[in-house]
Amino acid sequence: MAASGKPLQPIIIKRVKKAGHGAHGGAWKIAYADFVTAMMAFFLLMWLLGSTTEDEQRGISDFFNQPFLVSLMGGPGSGGSVSILPGGGEDLTRTAGEMPRADPVMLARQLGEEAVRQEAQRLERERIEALREKIETVINANERLSEFRDQIRMDMVQDGLNIQIVDDQNRAMFNVGSALVQPYMREILREIGTALAEVNNRVSLSGHTDSTPFGAGVRGYSNWELSADRANASRRELVAAGMPDTQLARVVGMGSSQPLLLDRPFDPINRRISILVLTQEADARLSEGYRLTTTEVQGEEAIVDAINNPPTGVVNLPPLPILPTPPVVPR
Image 1: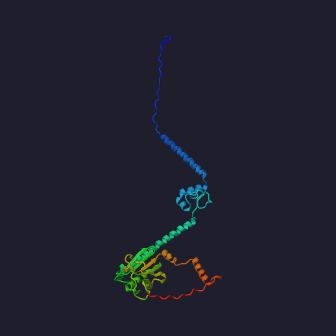
Image 2: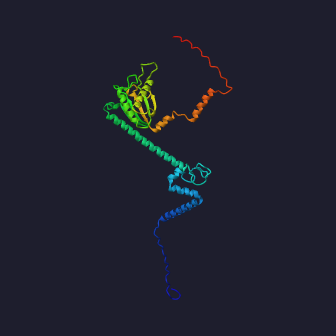
Image 3: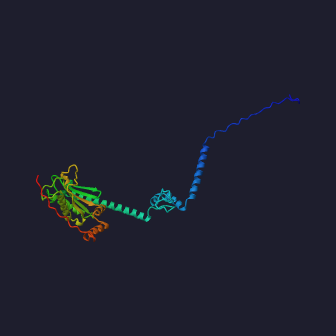
């Protein structure tokens, strides 16, 4: 009891326990990291835009607007080069902007010429295909020629239409060992010559034999001469049918050098006449092999002139004496 006579009041101490808030998780950290990353990217973009020139900005804009055109005309941007030098590209003096790799007018002209060339090739292929169908129709419509249909082969090859008239064991195109054309062979050649007269493509004509050696006739006459004579005889029949002689690009005798059946060189089917209707590209490539350039002609003229007019101071040596041939001693 206190001095005043009042009883003492007990001292009560209240301890308040703070309840914890609910768990927020770590989602705010991810959002904050994304925000910081976006701000860093934004300031980096602003810094890059501030450090590039107007030409470089135009190049970047052109790349995103027309990437295919930029890749054709100049590269991916700012010089279009991996060089560490300023500007890079093919011209080291250029420090900004696109680095053109080609003249636009020249590139457009080249693309146009390529498109024209491809269209011309397509039309020529269609014309040669029509020629093939026409020859097949003529042969099938003729009862006599249709009997020899298995001896006529027509294939589209890289250089054009290859028409081959092959020999048969019982049906020879020429007399044995000669270039005399058989009657049925003459009819086939006349029909083909009539069809070829309606096209402008030039023709390469070649004769072939099998590997059987030529064992009769004049000394020195071989399968080479025989194949050439047969090719020339076929040429006369084609020209007689109306095909212009100027339409022929070449007439050659191949002998037995190109058998149709490699594993059977003595088979009669290797004896054949090949008529190749050339495409314009193949004709140009063939003619290029026979054409001399201006430099080559001048070089040949210089050699001939040096032989006819030797330079002064050169001593002309007398020719070497011809020694007698020693007698052959029999063994």
